[in-house]
Amino acid sequence: MKMTPELYGDMTRQASPKSNYKVNIAAAFLVGGAICAIGQIILTILKEYGLSTTEAGTWTSIILVGISAVCTGFGWYSKLAKHAGAGTLVPITGFSNAISSAAVEARSEGFVLGVGAKIFTIAGPVILFGCSAAVVYGLIYYFIT
Image (cartoon, rainbow, N blue to C red; front, side, top):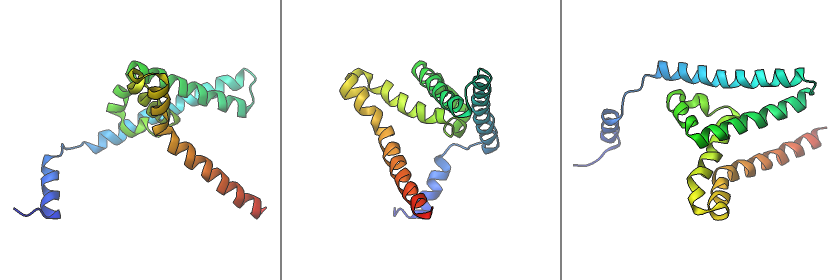
């Protein structure tokens, strides 16, 4: 039997589980919105305690990343992501989960060669391209102004 792209496509459609995209979209929207709403509540509370908008925003990001890392360590974030899908990936908590889960998986290999090395398998490209983009945008801004 010769495998053609059309035949392969038919086989994968038959073998793939059917997805209820309406429920998935709604769950992602609600959970992602809830995470962002929690962030907004934290931001508002910090501003009420006298922090500037910049300071409150920084601390809000730190708190959300910390909460996500703790939830990842206890295995709660993956359970939430199983039902919420992309709603847990888009906010900053999704990046924290990706880094934390790599560290949790590598902890048996030690802190330096395990956690220290594996944590940058996810963070490394983000840091590299984030810094590179910042330099390019900074140069563009410098030459425009």
